Length: 314
Ligand SMILES: C[S@@+](CC[C@H](N)C(=O)[O-])C[C@H]1O[C@@H](n2cnc3c(N)ncnc32)[C@H](O)[C@@H]1O
Image (cartoon, rainbow, N blue to C red):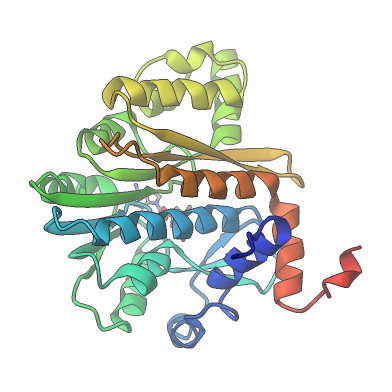
């Protein structure tokens, strides 16, 4: 019988896939990181949990889609792509970023992978980094995603087309108008909802009677009814269900114990005749990710990078 991996073992296994000195793509990454070595996105120790979810869910979805001869075209879209390489602040720990997670593992299965990035330095560097993979189907769209969304939607709306969107803004840059457009396609979506920061913006807006950017994010003033970040994510989910009725949605909460902060990752898919039994795999990842926090990531990283032995934790 295959032993079920859970807890710290699960976390270490997932981190090894993405941390650049342990990943199965470490040779390619060493080459890639030499291109503009000082260009990377910096983040905190809670961010690998987001990358873990992307890696896991994209793998589940792509594995299923590959077996479905119904789909003639497959698109992967990353609207907030970054530079391809991420570094945890105040450490020397580097992770492969969302574009490389997709391209390393699945470029051969998608007709096109499209990466939008607003920051010129990041988009130029990402382009050079992806070119080293010698694939003809990886396209960096330089500039704001808003300039490209309509042309992307035209592609993914075609019949017999599967698409997967990864939407990973820093905070509230992804407006409801655009979420509505993406929801109207049959795409699978991972959306990063920055709950604590949005909650802070709500507190501020209620005091100052502002809140235009919140209304743009939610599509209406429903955010005003929220008393905390859990309410906000529930309201956002209900707004999604008004657009894509019956959509199976799984919400994964990522916590920072160090900073008393959290964000929620929303995985949105479509109801299928088969009853979406494969969602159980996503629920397994949800359970494992929610058990963890930035502190657990730091411990797991210390172990996989051999800065701490397994036994010294106890
Ligand atoms: C959270 S980071 C993305 C990290 C990346 N997805 C990863 O996981 O490796 C958000 C990125 O979105 C970019 N960005 C912000 N607003 C944007 C916009 N309107 N269009 C495209 N990119 C944008 C930022 O420059 C930043 O690199």
